[in-house]
Length: 496
Image 1 (cartoon, rainbow, N blue to C red):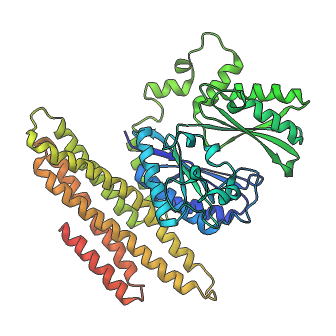
Image 2: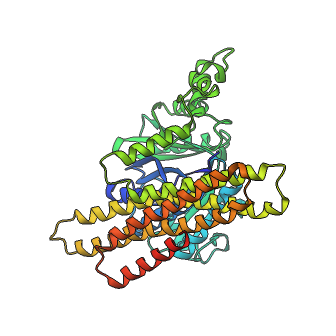
């Protein structure tokens, strides 16, 4: 099972498309797979959803926080949604092969780095909270940017978990946490009476004595002349979409209003909508696992027709074969490295399962397998980063020739386009060394697999080297060229 984490950073910009795209591109550059980008002008907020390997997601979240801090000034930011930071909240959510406890560790790693490098105070929340009072995001964000600015450094209860005990002058603070899947469900009323909205939100949410596992707040949609009841279903199995809709509709009727439309913000589990349909239809003797076609097809392995790895291979080959410049040789090198690491992991894993294994070999094989797994995730990130680096150079090249920044940006783009495949070559050299040392410890039944892993890793280094060299030719900084070339030669020599 692949290790997969979902991240849903919310940042305080929902109107400037260029700024939103810059932040989204920052996540892409770390190898994250973007699932959804949801913006709202009234809230002046963006909800970005992406998935990836755990380490790649930590890097992607850091780059999102860095980009948002550079672009967003909360002193001039106005929006209906509560916020205390340019990047307001970053949750890690387990998807597959990852536990909630591991997501807590990811949140701590990210929080420490944001505090140390970006000088932004970080508050851990939900499952990551060190203080029980901070499990509730609403309590962490109480007072928003303006209120926190007055209290931090003075109120002991507002000392952050990481970073300075002072507000960042423009980026504010950020909440970083680990949580389960939630549903963000908004209900738009056919009234603009905010007093009614406040009463409905208070009575609907758990803290006001309403539905369990539901947070709710009234939002003014000024451009639409409506009140929105913005809810978060923290456990949709306890209080589902239908239950929230029914309760808000009942409370709205007391004020002579109705729910006109509803919205799902970001992504939600399929089960949440299936549950809504089943509750609404009031079906008898219905077995969702048997009678929902897609679930049945998944259960018998018929959906998709063949194993996922075969489809993935075809997708990669197709992406390389088309006439787009990316992905190109640098990404292919990283993919080769990831495959080499995967084969090495498999060979070591099969050997470790053998009842005939000499126990003296176990510690070294276990360590090698773990290290190859970490390097495989690094290759996954580098494959995407290589394509992003080339696109960045092409963007600089596409600037008008009269632009005074064009030449400098092209040079920086070339250096980055050389630095990324250099990192791929260095990672391949390290992985090759790990696999070579593990090869004699692996069983004879997997010797060919381990040899193939070594060949793939060497190919990764050689292909990455080609991509370094082609970019060195355009770099005018001779010292930088010598440095990059010297490090490349060292990496290639390591796996000769």
